[in-house]
Image (cartoon, rainbow over all chains, first blue to last red; front, side, top):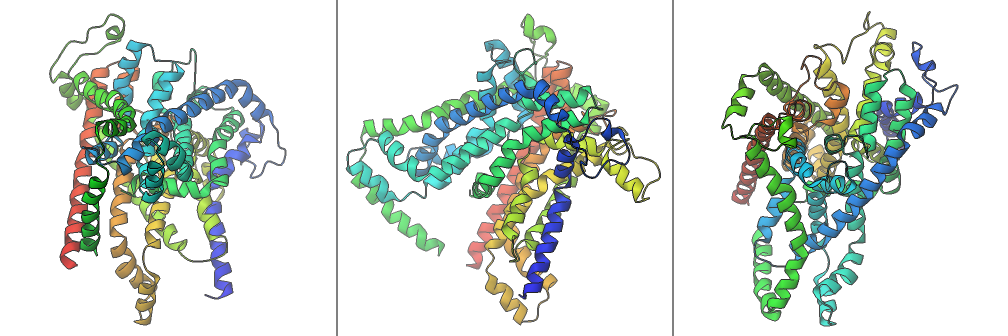
Length: 272
Length: 320
């Protein structure tokens, strides 16, 4: 391929990205303009007179919701990894009876629509006092992350060289010791991928958040944005500033861990 | 090839088992690895799904939560649903939303995947940036599209007016005519990256030598795409459409934040309707019934998919 054609492809590629990411550009652009400026037509294509008032308002009204989401997302990561990593290792390595059936169950439960979970968990949570609580949100969000994490970790853990595990066993390590000091360090990348995606899933969850929190005690950021948009449709710079803040985890993930992201998307369901 | 690997693993398996007889304690230790997950699956999937089934045969009201009591009413909930005028609307909207989203996500995703198959400077970085919409919380994307679609000040109408493509602003979200289409377009944007990534990884597995051979035989780009890319990509295409279908059936966030299912149920799908029945009207029985309908639809398509991959495997076996 000639150099001109290669550069031509790059130009086309950049144009495609610009068009495709235009909504993201507008989110940032609007977040930096004042409410008044946004009520002019046509809208300014560039924030010539940038203001941080939108961000100030976002932090003032939505700051606590961001913290709530952070706590829920971190809790979900911890719970998910604690439950999924050992299970994934067992499904990948041990020849226990019914292992294959279990893998099939893990695949199948991913198909249960979230609305069914919300619908049936609500009376259950209401009965045991898990509504409007961090443990309730963490457990609910873990239904999104545990099956995914088990599948992706299992794929990687089947790839751990058997000799490594044998060696640890010969040295007298028990099953858990082998798992903790040999398998997990070798699978560090897979664990990071599963953890990052669990964080994102829990951070982005809206259905469980809007179903299981009333706003009295805790309110995740997704519900915060939903109510913000619903309440005042003229205050777009505050809404968009909140949207930008809520996008930070995704952006950080994309910039710092791109290879994990691609591995997560393709590995979650496809490697089966 | 397949038979080869099968015999190797077949011989190694018994040997492995003989070497490590693994007594009761060993077995027990192994089970402790899966036990937490099994408990979680039982408590947070099996129980809720069964509970949902039971709820669909019960009458639930606000009082059910305070005083208890949700009497068995047989098929009443299902009968009430089917006779509800919203039912047909929601089924049709779900079909349109799913089909429209899938078709365009797939076609655009495939086009981009083929484009990014070329080698050029920044190819990987640009492809990576394309993933952003998929990673953003749906509520964030929904809020952005809500502004884009805003009738008076949103950029879409201003752009179309400026280009003289329309003479009056279009009420994208507040008219029954456009609401569903607007939601579909926003959802397509969200789903393209997923199709792009999976199809692109599928394309990597197509040997370059095939293209070179076809080019030598005088096949043009379109012919190469039709005769090499598409047939070899078939299993990946099946997966991407299947997963896309399951995801799209349960889309909730996007519609909820854009239109809330309105105006006048114009963009109501089975998912948003189920939510409205349960969490707005507190009729959890009917909400559960709609949810069960969604499970059945997803299962039917999953079985169709399993059958299609079984056919692919068996036809490959015959050829080999």
